[in-house]
Length: 579
Image (spheres, rainbow, N blue to C red):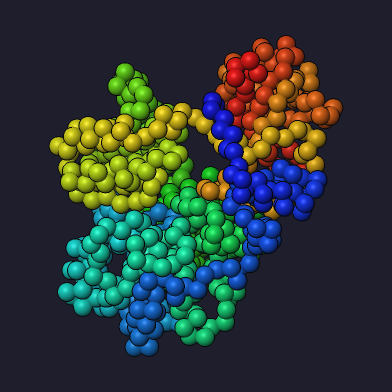
C-alpha cells in the first residue's frame, strides 16, 4: 500500500499554461493539469500529445553512424553477402531480430539472411564465441547486432579479424571504450545528436530500417507502420519511457496489435484469451511479453523469433503452445525461487534495516527467472535488489531498482569486481567470480546507503490531481483515454478524493479476507463508486462504521457487453486525522 502521497506543486510557468489549457477543457480542469504534469508547455502541443502522428518521428539520419550503417547494409545487399541478424534472448532482442529479419526479407534472399539468438545457459548474454564460429563456418560477412553489443569489444575484435563486419544497434549505457564496429547506433552515446534517448533495442532497429528505406526511396514513415506491433511489444516489455518517439510508436503499434497484428502475435493474443479485448500496454507487460520471454528463459529465444516471423498460422499456433508451456514452467520456478529468496531475507531481517539493499545468492537457482525474482523483491521491500545464481563458472544475475535510484551507477562503482555488466538505470545484468560476492555486497550496500534518499525506500506515489466523483463524467473519461498509452514517464494518473464514506455495502474479500471491495460515495453527489483495495483489511472496521476517509487511486475501465464499467484501483487509504 502506498504510504506517502506526494502533491507536486506547479511552477509559476506551469500555472500559467494550466490557466490557458483550462480554457480548452472547461468541464475537465483535472485533464488540463494532467497535460501540464506530462510536459505540455503550449496550447498547440495538446493535439500532438493526444493524437500522435508518425510525422512526429525524427529523421533517423540524425543518429550518429546511421549513414555508415545504411551504406554498409546497402553494399551487403548489392553484393549478395550473407547477413546474420543477431539479438538478445529477451522480448526486446527477439522482437528486434524479428523486425529487421522480416523487413530485409523483402530485399534479400532467404539463403543469404539468417538470424541467431544465443542460449542463456550455454552462451550467456551478448555476442558469444559460438556465434562468431557459426558466422565464420556459414560464410557470414555482416552481422547486425540488436539490443546488445555495445560492450562486446573482445568478440567484435575477434570477428573483425576473421573478416566479419558488425553494425551494433543498442540502447544500453555505453562505456568509454567502444567496440570496433563499422557503425554503432545508440542514442545514449555522449556525442550522438539524436534528439530522443529512450528508444528500446527494437526501436533502434526500427530507426535503422526507416533510414534504409529512406536512403532507397521506399515510401515514407507509413511504409514501415506494419512493423510497429513488434516495436510496441518491445517498448512495453523493456519498460522504456512512454514519451517522445516511444509514445508515437506505441500509439500506432497498439492500433496495429488490436486491428491487424502479425501472425505470431495474433497466435499469442489468442492463447492469452485476449482476442475480443482492446489490448493495452498492461496486456503486453503481464500476458504477451512474459510468454515471448519464456522461450529465452526456459529453452531458446530462437523459437520466439520463429514465432514472430512465420506467416503460417498453424505453425504459429504450435509454437505458441510450446511457448505457453515454457511460461507455465517459468511461473512454477519463479514462485519457488521467490519463496526461497524471501526465506533468506527473513533470516537476515536485521541486516536489511533502513537503506540497505538486497543482495542474495543461491547456486541452484534457475538463471532464466532470477530477473523476475529481483523485480518482485524490489517491489515488495522497496529496496534495490540483486539476485545471483551460478552459471558457466561464475556468479551471474540481475538487479532491479526502486523509483528514482540509478542502480546502473551503483553497480558500475563495483566494476573492478565484475567480469561483465550492462543495462539501464533501473535494471542491470552482472557477472562476477564467486569469491567476489561478499566484497561486492559490502561495496554495493555502501554505495546505496550513501546515495539513496529516505523517500525512495518507502512506497510513495505522485498525486496528479484531487477530484470529486462528480468530475468523473463521460468527457473526463474520453480525455483520460486520449492520454494513453500509459507507461514510464506517462504513468496512469493517480487521483485523490477526500472524505469518502461506505455506501453500506463494502465488504471483505479474498481467501484470507485481506482485501476490501468498496462501494463508496463522496459529498459531491449520491453516485456510488466501486473500488478494490488490495491488502488493506486493517481499515475495514473504520470504513464499516461509516466514518470518512481519503483514498488515492487509479481509474480502471473494463468493457462488458458494449457497456463501460468503472472501478477504482485504490493505492492508499488515509484516515483524515493521520495527517
